[in-house]
Image 1: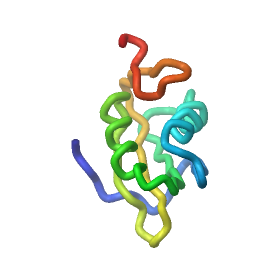
Image 2: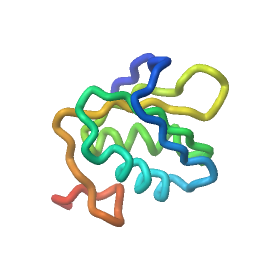
Image 3: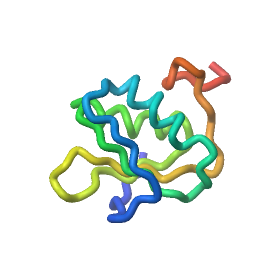
Image 4: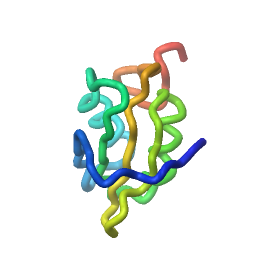
Length: 98
């Protein structure tokens, strides 16, 4: 898994404040549906598992985890992938092939 320096600017911000990661990932998946590859999404995530779950989800789905966004807030950056593997509607950890 490769981590890149997170860019300062985002094409989209997804607010997952107060959400557990499963709910956050469902919200994130809906928010990025149709977003063009290469776009950068900042995710506000207060769940302590987010720094582990977001990179794992990106690896599963084909997006690129860029890492935490500098600034002291719990914000993480993801770059939308070109060859995305969609997940099941209610199971963000399972690709549709699972």
